[in-house]
Image (cartoon, rainbow, N blue to C red; front, side, top):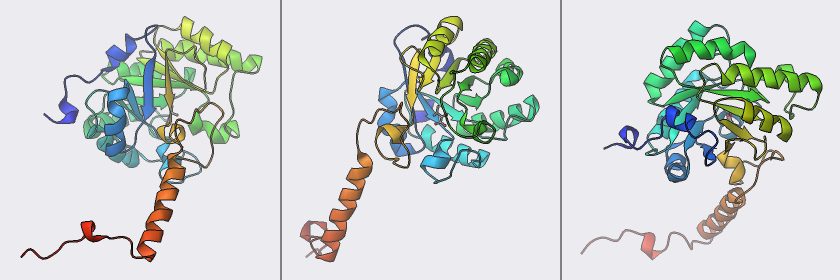
Length: 273
Ligand code: KIV
């Protein structure tokens, strides 16, 4: 049986049912080998549009396309046997109308075989989420700091510090949490508000920079592994320094090649007698 047809895969309703229980473990994955490594430890793998910055060196997620998300979604699906897989809808693929969102979400589900899509937005996206979920498309919401809105927000900064921001996040959480989404990512939001919202809405909150109060946590895998060194947000815990290990290994390989230590006899084919 192929990994993608495994009956053991967690579904969006099962993630939804984890509200208030053991915290939901989520990480990003963009490739088959990484999905294979992370899968057994996670409940949910997100093919995040953060791949634009992490894999492609883009300055933001704004230029990520639907075709890029579908290609990486397919790659991740080849590596999973357990986790629920969610693919991000990229900027411009869903905001214009609920009909456009539906068509593009269908493409993502049909072409990748993933379990659900994620889209950013608060009150203004609740109707779209209701439209999609009523038509068979599971949706993971995303409120708080919304990276696709970097240009209108004027940068990436945590939210929930002013009264206006608190009111907006409360309203966004209420709208998205009751729109049919099976869970909601809350990004870059102060602890008191994340706690309040988590208690108020009927579906799990998945925090990234939103404190331990959330029902689950997500990090960009490359951040927590020390593979993406351009910028490390305050909320990231580094579990390794793989970037440094890659550089050290490349240096050792270069030395071995230049001094003819590599390839050695054991790496060399000899004519069979
Ligand atoms: O794109 C992404 O990786 C995300 C997570 C940071 C939640 O949206």
